[in-house]
Image 1 (cartoon, rainbow, N blue to C red):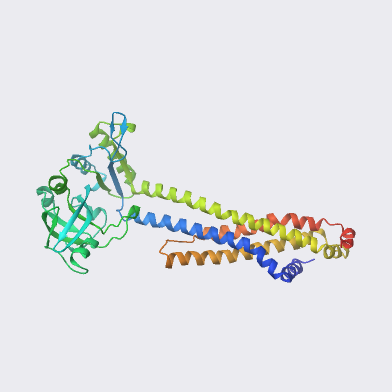
Image 2: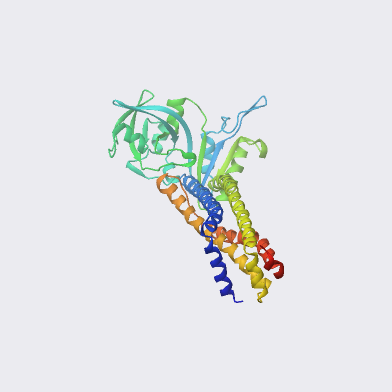
Length: 404
């Protein structure tokens, strides 16, 4: 019997019980749609995290204060106070480093006229806009002279400027109060949006780090140092040089380091690994539906074999081979799986589009997920359809014709 004739018989058999065929496909549809939607959410989250981290700057190396250990009590990351401006100055002398910016943060209230706003303040130096590729919307950033003099000058984030002065207003040279001290506004940063860890990068102000240390907080240490390698190719070498320089300056080695050095790639890799683990877990849970759908296919095919025993016996009696019968039932199972899988892919795409467009949730359907879903659907059809097909092909023609 030709493969074309076998296909026609298989499709006719499925068409005779449309509702049962549709319900059998439902398990595959739900399973594939759930897997596609979960993978889309995971992939979208991973891409979003990578983009947010990249907004921090290119070829970025971050040095952070490490854990302090006092009497056996470890304070955790950022607990020690040994990260100093002198450390940043030593990093500027490294040939692999292009720019360096100190960083010290605090929260405070800013006031202009009848308006006020509680925001975060980052003390830094003139290299920060270059490192983060962050241009200004109005005015200019502070200068080296402002840093040396611990001048009371400030650059506003977009949200802070809009709150205090209104939208599309240039507040350059205006005076605001910061912790009851008068600061002159030098400019406004362009909008940056949400950064790593979901932080609104526009809801902050920038002042010289010396001003934060001497006039706002009184502390002597800094919290972070941002360094930019000269190129992506030298990033690893630059990070190694930064680590070696910091160990020499702090008299530490390896396990007793009181600082941490991270590159943008390290942070992306860590975030991606966490996201991938969660995506795999969710996809695995959704994949249980595929297993249930496969079992449903096997169950229905076994019922179909029982119902069509006399038909199978008649075909075998007039010369059909066992292979023809096996192929017919196997094709029926595969068709149910593939058609259900295709419908599931369409529904998965629709769910991802809905989440992306209407729920503001990043959802990206990768091509490999679609290919895997199609291949898995076919594999489920073959695996769970083979036993019923083999059982049908192995029927004795005489016994099958006697079956009532």
